Length: 114
Ligand SMILES: [Zn+2]
Image 1 (cartoon, rainbow, N blue to C red):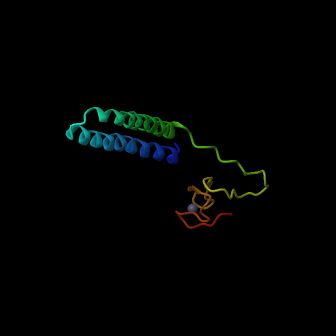
Image 2 (spheres, helix red, strand yellow):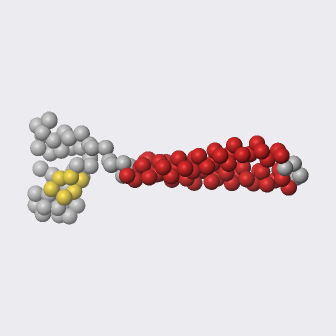
Image 3 (cartoon, rainbow, N blue to C red):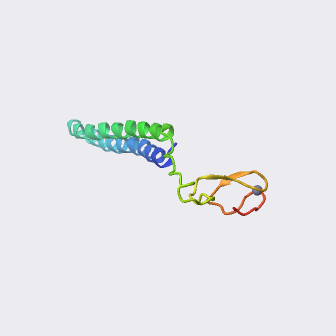
């Protein structure tokens, strides 16, 4: 899952109906003022809102199902025993708890890396 893509999609899902709604309210006002045919220009916003909504749903689904980009494995390439890249799991030497290497100590027992 890619949260950024997912939230962009969710934002578009929210934005789409808002565009349609604002067009609809504007359209309704036009109709109530007696000019029914002037409303035709609002159709583009209905379509646009629908497109944004559908695209947002697709973007959100893509964001959920697309796997995370694999972090470049630096382990071994630099010869260092401790992976410094954030997001890499390390195993605590003391208690065996797995935690993010971005932390410099074990959150369970406080044992420092290395
Ligand atoms: Zn520990």
